Image 1 (tube, rainbow, N blue to C red):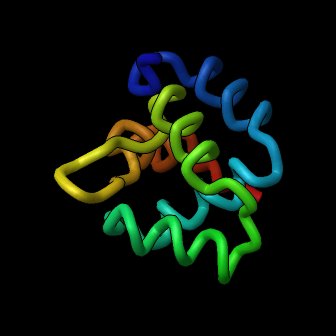
Image 2: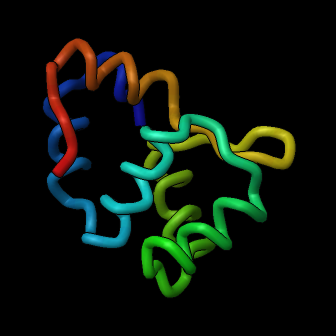
Length: 90
């Protein structure tokens, strides 16, 4: 999905997030880049996400986060679009 050019699609995707997806996305917005193992452990232990790898894969598919080498990063397009739309997540 091209979040950079389609703000209405972006808002639609954000509004369709489940509670666990929203919590997970907020985690990555807050910490920007997190090691894979740390992210899985923290999301499970601190945020109560039952299956963090499943939720992370959904966010990867939606283009909201990206996989780096041994880490996950919030999508730069997401951050840019959030800033342009002056939108925050719940």
